[in-house]
Image 1 (cartoon, helix red, strand yellow):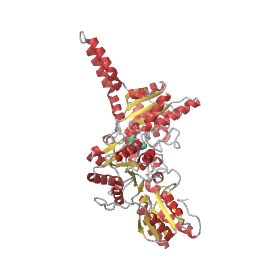
Image 2 (image 1 turned 180 degrees about the horizontal axis):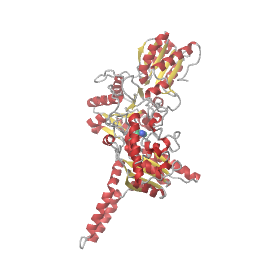
Image 3 (image 1 turned 135 degrees about the horizontal axis):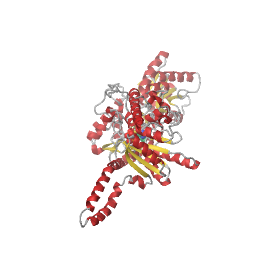
Image 4 (image 1 turned 180 degrees about the vertical axis):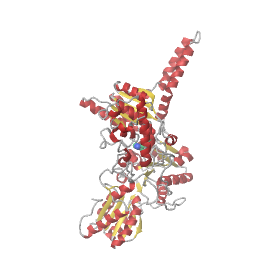
Length: 636
Ligand SMILES: Cc1ncc(C[n+]2csc(CCOP(=O)(O)OP(=O)(O)O)c2C)c(N)n1
């Protein structure tokens, strides 16, 4: 058989393929995805599960005139390959390469940028209504997983789309998995729909049997039918979608390209909002990913033959240490409860969920609900720990203010992946949390310099009588030893790690160790550099910082967060509030722009957030101070 993939440069190239050729192309695309992702890492299992959906959509619809929107976008690799990115696909998630998510600036077929769950139906609806207002004529399709369908935003959009009777199509890609096993009533409902063909068959057989009972058959059938009126409501395919105003079609085998082709052609001609429900297998076509779709949801580079990771580090991750410590503390305190929004593995809560099933809650991809749910648990004397990635906490902002902080409730936010995350890029960098949490009254916010401090902070947070956030980075700790049961820390106290009176670096979390190295490097220039580990972003250790300002006159702040409203801003505000007009504050952090994807070390180097970057920045700040030039913010 001639290979086909090499000839596919745009969706036009698949329009005339036969079913047999489509199947062959699906196989070739799978091999390409497996081969590239084994090098680059990425969302393997989700993308393998959506190959046929992508091919059939591009065969039937006319992208980019018709708009296809991929929810989360982590399953869009086949879409990328057939929309002119076959040759650059090997650069997936690499610096200057293509993004792991749909991105409008990358390609005209990426109708809407995604990365966070649950946005696709809103986006599709907005585009559909814009089309109607403009009097244009094209199709709009959202592809959303059963996991993403647990999020409030998806329901808000379904509700609105049904109300507007908008012409649009929602393809529900149902594989029963979120990252972990999907949770909740919607997931259960979808699996009921999966059983539907069987139910319909049984119902037909029963009716025949009842009707044939001599003498009473007809009467029995009528009684059965009225009972069925109620029952049927629970079983009619897609009744929930139908009641929301959608026409429901399904369920269909989402790996049967021929069927998908036929269904998409059929659904194209139906007016109004439509749902096409397809059943797929996560990881389809790669045995290790089919067996362990959780591991291969967001895969690190791996060996294709075995599925084993390529790099095995020995130092445990912050996530793992957080999870272990929470388990240890929860054994001592029955009031501790653990909450995740669909990420038990990613946030380190798997062991907790196993040991304390009644004190563990996976709420689905529902961050807003998770925050308010935690607040309510806290009103009843529990100590909720909501473990969440920094980027996803953005979803629950109002709830943090209105439900947790305003009521001063002792919820612990364990903010993982705070700072740059690397290859997932701008949708996932956790670089805003300092700025968005710092202005909220009542909250205490900390950042550990290493894993030993992380566990001390966790203990401290669990003793504190109000809301606490601990932000810690992606990746491994630094390899320091850990206390079995961590001690408590005094709230609002930083520490001095290096003495010096020429200038002072005040660093937060992941930036503390590189700052210590930077200070060592500054000795070469005869500069005595004080290094302070802030530990607390709120409340600040005002005494420690003001003393450093008075002694050194040059203060350099370093953080892995945007400078706008960040830790450096807090220090500047403190210094100006105290009238120290002769002190110069130079702040290093993330500039006011979205940071692209690339390896963590590459991005940190590029932004000067490395030991040598900090050293150069600090030296420059000192020289500027001597020559009377204004201080710089970041690497200008
Ligand atoms: C708001 C938000 N929370 C959490 C995540 C992390 N996340 C990425 S994919 C995913 C599961 C999505 O499941 P589903 O939609 O069923 O797609 P599948 O991977 O199963 O194909 C989660 C929780 C996210 N992207 N956005």
